[in-house]
Image 1 (cartoon, rainbow, N blue to C red):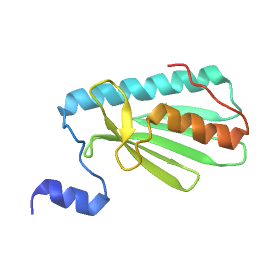
Image 2 (image 1 turned 60 degrees about the vertical axis):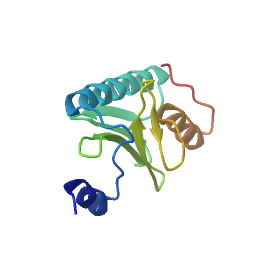
Image 3 (image 1 turned 180 degrees about the horizontal axis):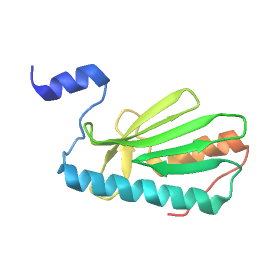
Image 4 (image 1 turned 90 degrees about the vertical axis):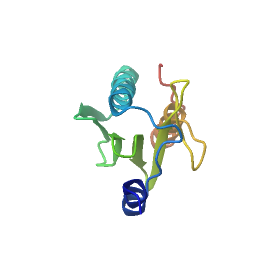
Length: 125
């Protein structure tokens, strides 16, 4: 069993469809998380938004918490919100797409936030 197979078996993650250098992944993931943080700040929603060490957290007054983080070993951005989880793979066009569902990162965040807030949300990209 290869170390890649072992990693997949232990954490349930799939390696990216087109592996990239770790430094390239980290740069792209960091840029995506910083851009998301900025866009969420611009929305002015009633939530505490923090980005630390590759973990973007969105905490609402009712203690609901969404987590979006880079996962270096899997080369993915992971998101957990409302009892659901997504694993987004980097694409050559700069987007992040969940291979299991086809969901795109930014659109997924807009949808989940919109449901939580009871109104349509559009993040500036």
